Length: 544
Image (cartoon, rainbow, N blue to C red):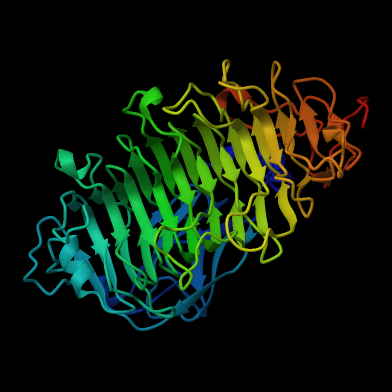
């Protein structure tokens, strides 16, 4: 996955790798951020999977420490993924990976009480759920876990039928919460594969949703390392807080409707890391899929979200990822909804091959909390063809200043260190001015703006780098000079000179010389024009 990253902090990694020098290991995230150091298999505590880079292809003399002590076991060790078992020496503190090239950055972990259970295809629900006597079904685990407990799902475990709770769902999490310091967890056993959900909807003998919550209150769950399938939604999370979705494989090839393969509403404090969300509505005729169906949809009043290191690929209908808040029918004055969203961190993702935009931000308010898109690689987004409504827009990123409920909001949408490549290629969009590398729709709100820094935007043919819509006449009669788009040190290539907007400082127009863009390798070579200098350097090419 990391081979896609061009961004300036990543280009240094690419250069060092090319020259033979090695960098210290880097930890990005872990599946669990807390767990017991006893119980479970061999009484050695929880398994924790660590994701990052530079770990080395074999363990050798390398090690992992958790707080004061070394991990007890290492069932998986690759250059980008390590699975450890905590063991009795682990304590609350930092997870650190140490190799011959040095020590990694610290990632905090809490050792705390909790029981550990196992689910296996040869188990029985009458067993005690231990490693030696596992349960058979995920439903037994769901109904048995207490706050702080973890269930590891073994190879071949499969919950692919409606769970009978009346919600057209394979696994309903209803009135069944962990706590902030002791979440409940369903996790794949290291190196093994388990599946929740079904690509066929309820009417076809499967489930409309793989996992969903019923109402508000199903909080603090971790779902990690699993295959999640849905007739429409792999996940439907409504009204929850504190969920952690890590390293799952999600797909909804038969999905359609006003939703997404990963759909949230009125949710908060979500950590969504390292998931592969792919093949969304791809079994359907693209002209029959609604523009309202997406890969990921952070919908109504979803705030405080960290969405990083994910892949979103092969999405038909609408966008790879949409952020949009609209009033929920029946909310009423006592329960208003549809406010602008905030505290959103969308970073280090790869998004590609979508029918409409790669990412669209429609209703956000940076004055309430940061809204930022950074270190992403987005390519081949906005490919078309027409969806069911013949509607949409076709770009890598489409940022907007609309508001549905509440104050209109203000402040910068930060967009930085992204690679945006070959987007908006739909040859015959149903209306003009709807394709671009990056699009800004001002919605007659001069108090919101996009702040572009150190991005690479490469387009081809007649697709513009930037397209600006709905600019107040009193703000800037010439949209090329619109103050709604600001920033510095961006590189533009493929469709002529860089934009002349004076609010974009030190723009560059030159070939970034990706290692192999056709193979989705967007690394910058050591002698390329965009180096790890904090700004671009285009030798012998004019800056604007």
